[in-house]
Structure formats: C-alpha cells, structure tokens
Image (cartoon, rainbow, N blue to C red; front, side):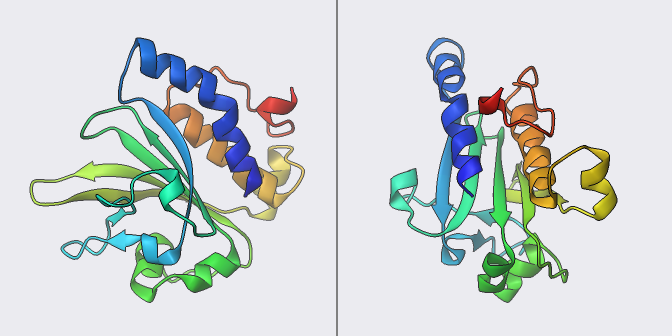
Length: 178
C-alpha cells in the first residue's frame, strides 16, 4: 500500500532526529516482503521473523506485501505492521496464515499489528491485534472507506509504538495532507 510508504517517508525527519540525538536504535522503515520472507519460529509456531543475517535492509526484499518495521530498543522494543490484502492472504503458507490471521478469510485488507516478544529460548514478533473494518466501525470514525479506517487504525498503532502520538490522525485527512 503506497500510503504506508508515505507514512514512513513523512516520519523520517523526526525518526532521524531522535536516532541521532536521543536513541541510536530508533528507526522506522518500509519493507515489501514476500510470503517466503515471513519465517515462523519452529518452537512456538506463533512467532514471526522476517529479517535474517543476509536480509536485513529494505533493499534486500523484493516482495509485494507492505510491512513497516519500528524499533526503539536494542534487543526488545520493536513492532511491525503487516498489510495483507485478500490476494496476499491467499499466498501465505497455511501455518503462517493460521499464526497471523487464524482461520479467518477476508475479502478486505487486514492490518496485522505484531510486537516483539523475547523469551529464554526464542524471540520473534507475535500478533498483538488484527485490524478489520465492519460497517459500523468505519462510519463511526468518519473514515471515507473501510480501507481508510484500517489505514487510520494502523497509523494510530505506528504513532503510538514510536511515541509520536502528537501527530494528528483524524480519520479524514492523512497527516501529510493537513
């Protein structure tokens, strides 16, 4: 989704300043991953990882699934937002599909919020929440469409995880439009 890339570009001046002056681990990057890049932890079958020693920069990935990676800590303190359209949902391995979405199938996009979990023998990103839009949800928030509602709820998650809650998200205008 192009708007997710715009979010990351919009946030870069703040992210770079915090990284330079306050927290060397603070970052926010946009990736496009393929279903084969979403690696499940074999021990838990519920934790997902997408970076490896050889693939750890946005340019190392050439998939179609939009993913925003946010980090503010050295070992812990990271989250990802994964945007899955119905087409991308169908491309997932059945085990990954079950871990990320469950048995649910949607014709509309689903935004998956994952937070980093760190255990004694394993680590990875676990599902924190799934954002979907029912009729009442997006109308209640004055969003233009279901997809805009999902986008705005995703933006809330990104801004909250990065501690940038002061950036306006009014469900009608995208921050770079205001």
